[in-house]
Amino acid sequence: MRKRWIPLLGGGGVLLLAAALLLPGRRTPPPAEYRLADYGGRVAVYGPGESGAPRRVTPICVQLLPAADRAQLREGIPARDGRELAMLLEDLGS
Image (cartoon, rainbow, N blue to C red; front, top):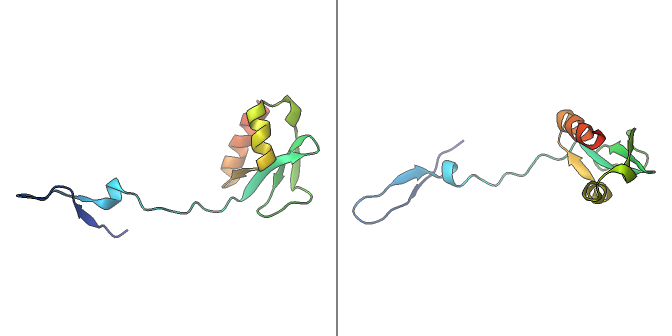
């Protein structure tokens, strides 16, 4: 990573700090590897861009979840990788 220095104080002395510490660059998050959504009343796992049959249908009943979780499932809950997918499924299933 290239460090850029920015002046923070003008006048007699100039205090310089690495901009990378203060202003982190905008990084695009990696595309989600998985997406959770409602499929026939169950939480299902989809791959990126998939909308037909899911890769996996879990035994988690959508109707038993809190309203906020149901709303997120309608939109689709992204998971960046298998680890995040496992954490989301554990949270929804508990």
